Length: 288
Image 1 (cartoon, rainbow, N blue to C red):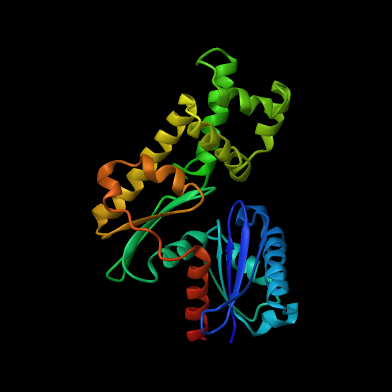
Image 2 (image 1 turned 90 degrees about the vertical axis):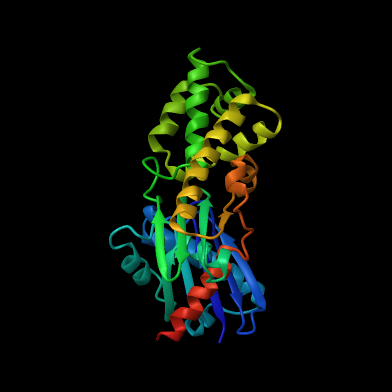
């Protein structure tokens, strides 16, 4: 049997096909797939990523029916989202669905005890210790998702507008953010009216790039994000997690900024979220 893993996140959707021996046959990628955009659009992104993976593996779409699939979807905890997604994906006969945070956690520790803080478009902290599980955060932007790409992007936009109003000193970062809108405040307001977590998170790489160039405003934003992530990691350690893995697109930028007391307990992830999705697929087929 072949196994399919899907990581449907707020910024990208990735798919991987591998055989029973663990050899990767093909991978693919598509656009955002957070459950908040609706089951139909998530299904479109999932199928686009799967078709790319199928093409890389030299397989046609009919092969999906015979695969054991594991899928981690951002925001899948929303009421009815899991059932709606299953209905929107009739091509799959063997499908196990979890959150994107859960597959990242399983991939990071290979099923063993440990804690994981995921920092991508959103953020969430998960731990497994002696069969017990703990989850912290992940309730959605802007109320939750501390230290995430969306939170960093929001802070960058706020700083840019405060600099425009003369409340704080301008910096290369604030000027760069406003330059994206041609300096037109009406365009900024229109963007703010429609922007969600994905759109704000798209500003996070800009913050990281300016911080690397020594921009103090950008560095303060990342320091705040790292402090928030450190609080999540500390809560997992206090709960009993022996180690904590920091995963997600912002992990490389935030890990060096964590307190030394937290860094002492950091462990590199064993594998990526797609590996965790494959674990889910294997578990799902074993319970059918």
